[in-house]
Image 1: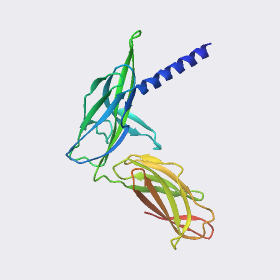
Image 2 (image 1 turned 120 degrees about the vertical axis):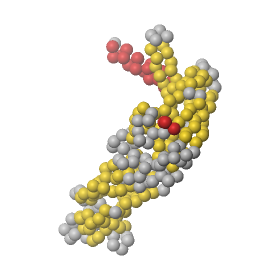
Image 3 (image 1 turned 60 degrees about the vertical axis):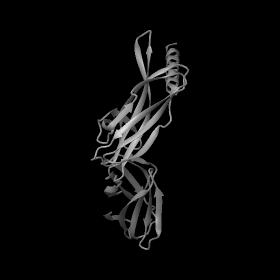
Length: 265
């Protein structure tokens, strides 16, 4: 009986939670915007009340933090707590408002970009609806967010291959984000022989979302049938934002089938 009661309470809670989120909708849930140092960027987000009752909504902003192993998992932290926060530049208007039943509200934002801004800055603007249980006086907050990425024109996208070592039949190492924007990418590799022909190729099983200064571990196993000789292992990174980067590891294979790392480029 207790298990059944717990199950029913859980179902009711998650049903109410889903319905509360469905009451608020946004016209955009993600934006990537180019910014210019010393200029103000203006825009807006439309919040829609899909319910048949008026709601009171308040705005806030949180920083975004990518979590190890940098495979896309993230969490929100208080505004201004990260090195790539734009929270202190942001003004929202209105900050608190009432949306009538089935109505909409346009929330304007102004982002005053400082002169020394460089690279990428990230955060999520939240729209929070607070419902109060009159019988208990306990408030339960529900919110929905629009994630904004701000990138300067002179942002640096760069990646380095570090800590390379041999495995049983290939190499392992780490990708270092040596630029100043978050890199969202997967990668493919081609093993080129001395004549420029492809001796082996493959692609990553995992993509990464890597903040500046952080590392992502990788391992590449090569085909055992690769013959003796000198090779260039070219790793190409396909950025989700468009374009690509590459790195290279020079390898040699001796008559016994042993690999040697010659140089990392």
